[in-house]
Image 1 (cartoon, rainbow, N blue to C red):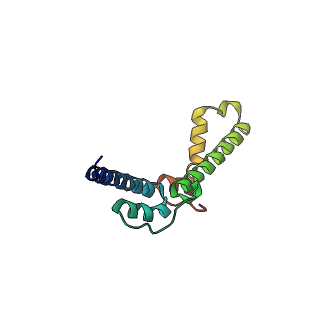
Image 2: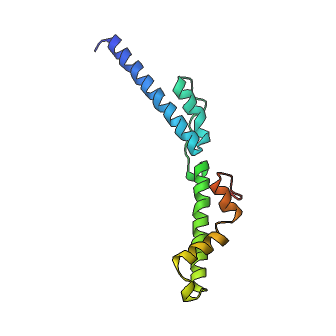
Image 3: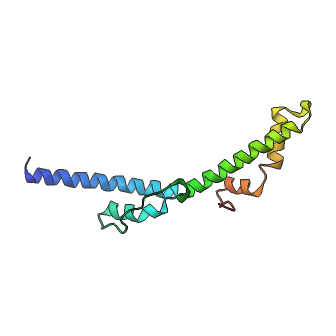
Length: 125
């Protein structure tokens, strides 16, 4: 392969990788991986990277991870509430429609649950 062909091939590969960095930048922004945005921004335009690395990263570093953790906690609490409701209810009350109505009325109307549905920050997360 001639040097000119190698250079063309390398330039094409650089453009491809810069495109992948641009896509990863959008993905990182949506996921809330804020610490990765500087390097991805630099990489997608061919600048020197500002940070040596943005790793390690775990779920709690991501905004999305915080929301998922809050949702997991709410589902756990809803499950516990539903179990207690079943134990303390009369047999004729234990029907799916009644359970859903009670769950909606007493649990899903809590401010932290409503905040999640509106995309607002959840207290304590």
